[in-house]
Image 1: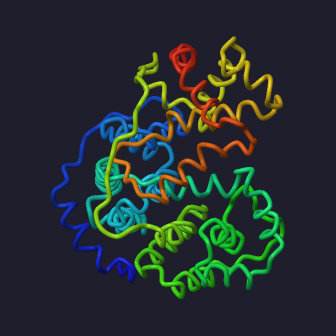
Image 2: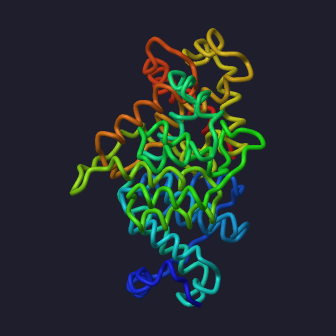
Length: 358
């Protein structure tokens, strides 16, 4: 089968596949939602063993979800740190016929997991999405752009306007699912990617992002080309995030797998909120009842779930991370870092709850 976009990638994929020993692993006895959470967090932390078992679980229970999730993860957690890894994942998710040429579903899936675990990481695109979606200081900009036309949005993208505004414009044109989507708004993703090419974004990055958008219909492939315009050239420093102590629960999984992205994790967070903790007291004092779980979940993600090994550091990425840390909840706080410190300090108490989840 012929894939125009991936002609240049095929030799690379063949070389990698020829050196890959397909592992024999036992799937985990967990729900697909928990398997997705475990797989993604293990990829972030470079834990090949856990990520591989979680992927095997998904391949057995819901293979379509596995391939779609891998296509999403590569834009969310690896991104501009390794365009080559994006290329590999887009190649491998082109269809079953392609994967059959390289040993079948598990051979290709396990290869991707290995490469994604060892690849450097960049979460700048996801941090950008959080910032433009929720940060309270961007509310006026969001309101202003929500009423503009497609032509105005495309002009902003093509004219290489400031990143935050251009990102909001791109999201409005794309039709991607996101929290600030305007109901009934017309979308034109084809013209959007054309505008990115006209803006001088590297051709391969636009092509891969367009394929990622078609695979996932998610917002992150829309934003990656815009973030690439701010990335410096040359080698960039790489560092590991500072991870909290890992606790293994009764299920055999690390407790960090249990967060708001699975019903098991949500149940644990709900139980934690009923306990007398500094975090819980703060939430009860300042946050409405219906928002406490989302605010807690977001804070937990910032101090635990979203941490990575081999994070590529560059000025724009660091600024976007700070914006996401300080504004993911949409609340105007005098000291945004203080709440994250509370969540970090209460992790042992949260792990007492998560430890018993099966």
